[in-house]
Image (tube, rainbow, N blue to C red; front, side, top):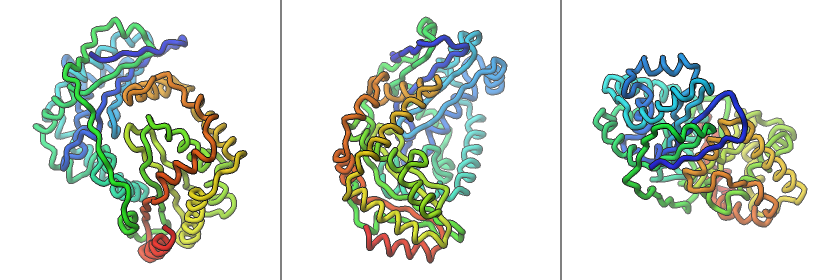
Length: 403
């Protein structure tokens, strides 16, 4: 049976319920990437008692919000409405998960919409560079693929694939969290009688320099650089040292990346670190875009920065500031009910205590801890670049020399 959790510390005029379902795009089969994305889109296109338009009109008529998001590790379902309407709307969560219509006619529409959306994504050079980066970092691993799938794969997905995947979907572990304890009294039959072990995948990290570099040639006035590697899951003791490193590099105008690339050299306005929470090995990625004329200088600075992170400890005052900024970010994420519930239900799905406070352990981490995890995970990074062929080839030469 579904595990239920309640968060009801404050009086609010609205209520929320979120469901985390273990298994998201990591459940997509080879050649069928995007299967779970299409399935989840179909769940909101009609259920028992509501056809497609009737369902959406019922939600809208109560001023409510219902969303489903497919992530690498799971699926997040969220319902939000004013308190006075929540009792009427809450049973819809049961219906869309256990009694969806899954009509073939709606499947064809979702399939077409998904393909159009993927075509738009191809217009973003950052998406292209990131897709290439994670494919070489997470070779033969579910994290190597876009959660929304790929046009070629979507075209291969049939209606029978959806029906088969829904049978898999019904047997996944599910967790409910809400700020409304009345939800516990509702009929909610999200049963999970066939509990199965989550799948884990091993990924080869050590590769030669050639296989750790990928480039996309395109006539453009900008060069996009993405460098990093896979690291550790959120459950690891090494999670916090990496988050402190992320804070040191990218949080605010006092961050090292801002000072090096924007304040000191005026090279870029688009720079940061991508280090999301993952059940398995999380990516740690530094990204930036620069003009063609500044690309070689930017990569030279980036290379020197990377070597300093591997061989020099961060000084105490910078560690202290990075910790303060990280603690502030944790507090900031607790400002809205949406963020609170989403964080808690995701932790539950990852097998952690939903009330676990990461900030309690920050003070025990020092510069030695950070340089150890940096050398463990980032000593042999992967680089993806996008832009002018001649400049990309020059960067490749510098990459082979420095990395």
